[in-house]
Length: 339
Length: 200
Ligand SMILES: Cc1cc2nc3c(=O)[nH]c(=O)nc-3n(C[C@H](O)[C@H](O)[C@H](O)COP(=O)(O)OP(=O)(O)OC[C@H]3O[C@@H](n4cnc5c(N)ncnc54)[C@H](O)[C@@H]3O)c2cc1C
Ligand code: SF4
Ligand code: FES
Ligand code: FES
Image (cartoon, chains in turn brown, orange):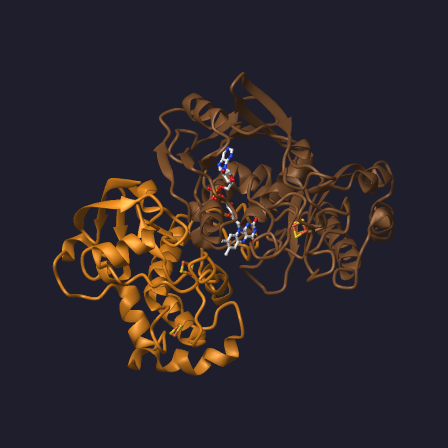
């Protein structure tokens, strides 16, 4: 590990100023991803600005008839999943958090750090192999290598990695906004625009500038968000990253789909909002066949190799499962549980 | 770069100079001599380095010691007497979770055990606070969580055991949680345990 200067930030503005001014400085949250990368040599900052003790650690319930939330960037994953309003009004967020990592890690991981965790691509984490994301221009080892976790949508010839966060997929389906503080003040980024596709610059995971600090995530509640959930398919029953995952929200009017949200994890370099599928379902009579057809339409652009071709059917089936759970709960409300 | 930090470990305060790159795990084991937390994977994947940090279960391998200046840490060794029950401070009585691991052979080589024990203490506390898990059916039912076998398995999944002592670990956590055997998964397998529970 390289020599490091450690600074505990006093306030958000000075943290932003320090990191903005130094290309080799990085924010430190709970450390569950960044400290790992320090050990692996994947990250080699010279200064860490610890933002994990800034007072951005509360979940504020916003006024308004539907209820909304402002989630501080330092709220721990476990506390966020357990928050009563998250559980009642944004169940997809609770479910996506609880599907990730372990109890210990969720106590430690922050909301901001979770959003900005980096890919688990095995080559990205192994400094002895070429990787365009870690070392631009060195090549992509995953193209011809181990491909089980590779993306199937929005890939480029330079990178086929997937974004690993479960929470980000939940938030994508809930139309969250990310509040970001930069040297010139605050701005809001829709979650769907926070992460980017790899293109020719896989080294950039997000649209944030160096030194921009995530201070909060905002959510607006609705009938739709209330009827939301998350499903994760993985290689073991717990404590494993997603092969694919689906966050969904569905509001029915009788048999008709009044509104719907679908976000996919494990398929792309960012949480993938299945807007083509959503559009195909909105205003239609709900049926499992309609959901499968809509998912198939979204997946028409999928590109797969031998190792990850299974993801196409898996994400289509998972989408059908999630929508079925949400629909039957509205059609037969006496049966509880959206797991 | 060296920095002076203070950590309270199992009730006693330690002030030490650490290189900023030192993990909390290395500071505890190599500098303070608190060797209950173990280095298994050193990458957050096994749970053997778990302690209670400011009262909550937490890994120490993916944490920098400097980032925890001023924090209070209880390791599995420090649970004895004091941390479990302030009234018994200084006594040698085992913490109910430690006792449960002994009662049920919740280990073989014992390497993962201190992490398992701290994690189990965290699980019991989180359940008391009503925290849901991935296998909780209804998110909207708040309050005390019933720790079924399925819940215990899921909540303890961040602690791996290379010896595969999971059956004993499950039995131990179940006892510490005050649950009767077999609820949630495969009740038939535990019928016998249930009948002999009082005799142990
Ligand atoms: C064994 C293991 C299993 C895991 N399994 C899963 C899983 O199944 N699903 C899942 O989703 N995740 C999983 N994770 C990943 C885990 O969720 C992330 O490591 C965690 O959420 C990162 O949060 P942190 O606060 O620790 O971030 P850190 O490690 O502190 O930081 C991560 C990144 O975010 C930046 N950063 C931190 N805070 C801010 C901020 N406020 N503003 C701007 N930048 C910031 C840092 O500079 C760094 O680049 C797993 C991790 C491990 C070790
Ligand atoms: S897929 Fe992306 S992260 Fe993985 S080796 Fe290729 S360039 Fe690197
Ligand atoms: S040593 Fe910390 S999780 Fe394995
Ligand atoms: S008892 Fe040997 S690793 Fe668990």
